[in-house]
Amino acid sequence: MPYSASIDVVVSDITELEVDAIVNPTNTKLLPGGGLPTQILKKGGPKIQIQCNTIINKITTLPICSSVITTDGKLKALNVIHTACPYKGLGNEKNKLRLCTVNSLKLLDKHNLKSIAFPLISIGLYGFSVEQSATIMLNSIKEYLQTNSTVEKKFFV
Image (cartoon, rainbow, N blue to C red; front, side, top):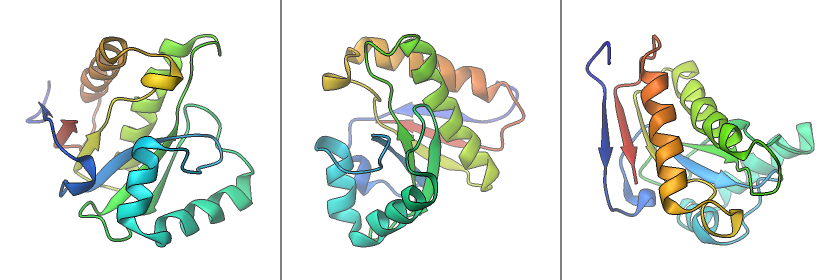
């Protein structure tokens, strides 16, 4: 890595981390369907969903692999990056998962933020195993770090 960035793998509640942004693996309507997205909105309060609704009112759906940013509501993180997750059966799912990861990091750079926490994306009902998701995401983060990214700290939760 060309600069002093690091990737820390931690077992933690992502909604309790004090970082510039946490990643919310969501659907194309930015609606909670259970799991982590519901926890993020429950702990963060209605402000986050109101911002998501405003985004969806403008664009109708968030394309799979795309990411958008909102403020944190009542979370310890400063922002939430919402990324529309791929699911098995779409075709080219591994590349789509890679793009979810990279597009989240690009948003972090765009907003000049320095730290991010990722959960595993597209596991469970979306069809990826923990091992598949972790491998694809970690490789994508490492690849992105080879760019001129200003991101200093990444947590893989």
